[in-house]
Image 1 (cartoon, rainbow, N blue to C red):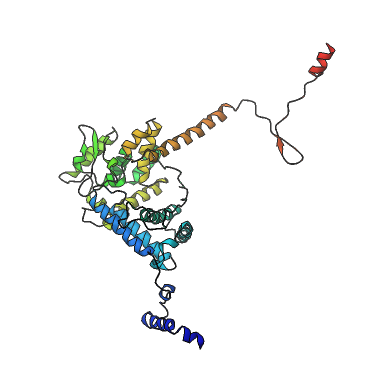
Image 2: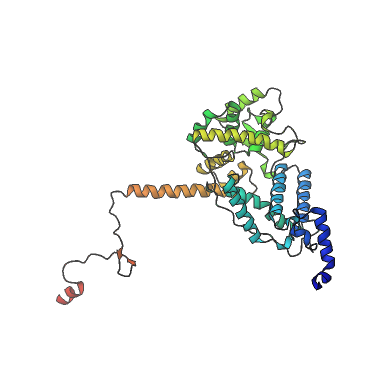
Length: 391
């Protein structure tokens, strides 16, 4: 009776909660007092509003295209639903251990349903890291940095394809018979110019100058570029010229180079419409790769262009300019891949050349299990010191 008397007010609140939402839908967060400080749900809403305003004002994406905003919103909502207290969790209670637990949950869920890979789980964690980096930066958050918050570090999974996955000429030739004419034209344009797939799909007829031999990548009303460094003029190769000539002729009076099947028709279209066209192209590409027995994505075509330039000895800064990279450090991975391959080939040549050479004697094992360097065979005759004394 003393317990009831002491907690009459709390029991009354609990009784009202049960009557209001029912026992089956009662959550732990409903029984707790309101948290002090900013919650992760409030911070996420403020962050999403910020990146939406940033994207709307800029001619470039500033790393937040409409598609990126949609992905960030989806992954942040997934994270909020995963947390024990949902949106009511305090932002200060989230740390690196929380990110690792969420990543392990996504990987386990993906291995069961086969709908998300470890790399996809990495991408789902990225919006949370970006959120905390923004919240701890007083220059970006209009209300100032949140006291006590700091950027979260997270070690991402290793890419199963290595640093970059490029396609060889033989692999592209194997894929070609399984693609339609327009899909193959899009593939060739992307691989020969090193464009992002969004840059390829939103090319206009006016961007192609076959007489001068250049293709211009510029922001338009219905296309934002990733950054200012994405603006560039790219030379047209001999392989690409007939492909673009046929595409321009097929476009006729149409403004865009490719049919409307592959992209959203204008800036008023939602990100879902853009993803629908992109996924339609991606599905055809994946089916063609499976039939050809080749592993690769649409973005591998861009890597193919960068890898070819690195193999030709083009400096990283020039490769960055042609790919539209904001930082040369992003481009250096093509050189790392090239050097790793060259080292392996050099070792292979040495092994092939040393087939007739004498082999290195094996290590001699001791009684204790350790190995020692092989000893020189003993020479016959008296030692040198003995020979000197005899003389």
